[in-house]
Length: 137
Image (tube, rainbow, N blue to C red; front, top):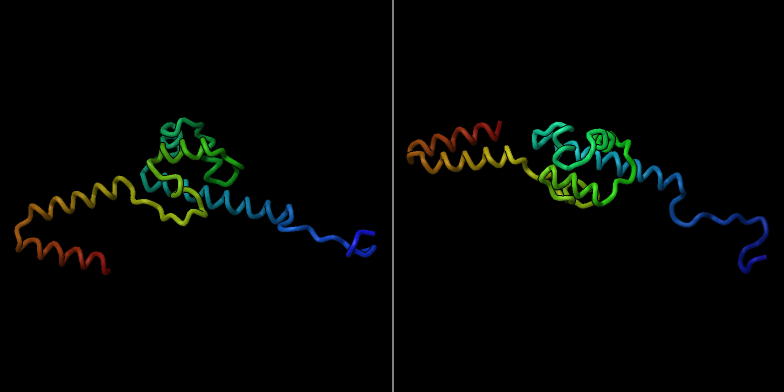
């Protein structure tokens, strides 16, 4: 008999069970896949384009996005992030990072600012009113 444990007592597993860990890993991979898909789509890229930019196989992007690829290495995640023009933290579910604006969106915002600098002051008021109406709809 072990000190403090009587015969017939069952020892409880410490921490999470194997099934619990597997469930957490599946949820994590599913969320990782959603974030990769969101980053790719926000940037207007197809899976093929993202894979080519990252230097990986197209089916790997597909499997990651669908939660069917388990345990991608850090090097793979770095390549995907670089290919998407994203920070790795944007892809990781537990990083707390918010998805970044797409290049197209940033380009549109810059264009809007440039146009506003060229507008005459009376037109600038109209631009602000129209933008306010659009944002508040």
